[in-house]
Length: 269
Image (cartoon, rainbow, N blue to C red; front, side):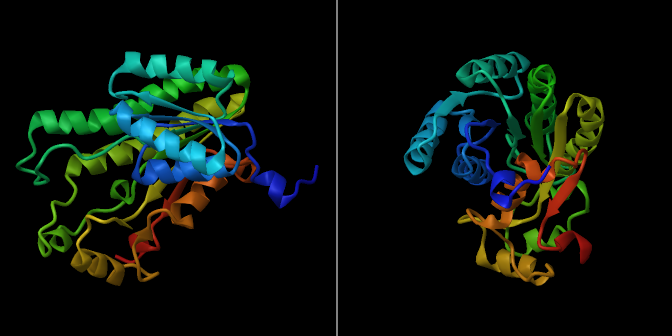
């Protein structure tokens, strides 16, 4: 059966849930899915941030947006999120597991405190597992759905900490690499479990993206070690394109894939 390009990427009236959807990567993903036609459920640990983002998305795209305050490290809150998302429109078509971060002031292997490591693993990895469980149940019952987990090239390569030290940046702790590597492995196995039920599970591993708090010297150093000669651009097609691809019918024959979006950084080391 033939399908046009426009139909392939049309998500009209689908429902997408984006954890951590109030800012940065999460907002970009919510923005492109709303433009493609989705109604949204977006979460943040701070409800006020989710509400502010929802207001902007409604105004920009005339879609229904439900903002919720959720801590994905709490399995009970994730269960409640899934229930609330299902009652919102009676279906959940897309889940993006984006909630994460790198809590704690230090990044040194020998300086990381046990509670910092545990919190990082909980918010990045355990939260993703909880969401795959709860939304996976919904999608299995529907016999359809798309789950996109957000990993990182930190799960693929070791970091040269000198890039960070030269400009006085904190850098990433090794437990962040462990969590993101875990998400890549989780994606493959959850995909194997859910694919027979018509649920597509894939992940995206972004590289470095330039933000307002990234020093210009670091942006230059990182760009010099990237084949495309630059960092990713927030708010651009750099991430929005891959997300729309994995959320749409264009990726209907893909499961368990880790889509690396890094300008080639990970192949040029």
